[in-house]
Image (tube, rainbow, N blue to C red; front, side, top):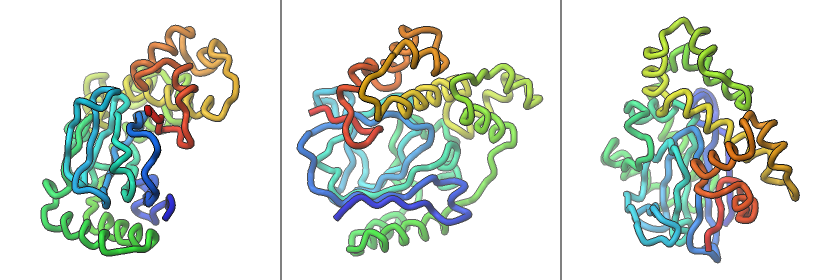
Length: 271
């Protein structure tokens, strides 16, 4: 039992940042809030025959999906059921990477879970059956990596999109979309359409999300936070602007986020 994370070998590493396997006892709390990340995810539940996402903190409005799904990218936080997070594994795609697996434009994946069998049929079903029969986490991850490599189409992101992703990722607190668009030589309309198709969200929303992620990474391990200073350093106009963005992406204020922190930065226990 344990939590195992590995980086895939080339060429998958260009599309997937990590593969992970979680085999742990049930958590003491029922629900967790999961913060949004810029890429899509593959989730394979090996404990139950479904995945569940809730639309309220009380866990009353439930959206049920297949046991194996492609989810996201998400534009806001989601609430998951820890009762099913006992034996589960998956992959975290880089921005734009899930298109290489599904063949779908990223806009069709935003804030949705699509059953893996709906896309790959018996191949996806066979994958989960083999994973269920594989007791070793390292062997499960190797099997998943082989399956992904066999099904990837390996498309290239447009150079204009790659450039923008690199610039925003390197300096999210100061990224400005107007100059980036001018650097690409495309019109604002063409660039926005291309970016949304390949990344799943508009470039301005992506820059906002990356700015939020930058702040989360900066404060997660802190014991005391000067939020006014964090707001300025993070590229926000003022603390009120920072609070607004935390509510939009995390569904809570910055101080509530700090109080709710658990052992993993993206997962906040709700009780």
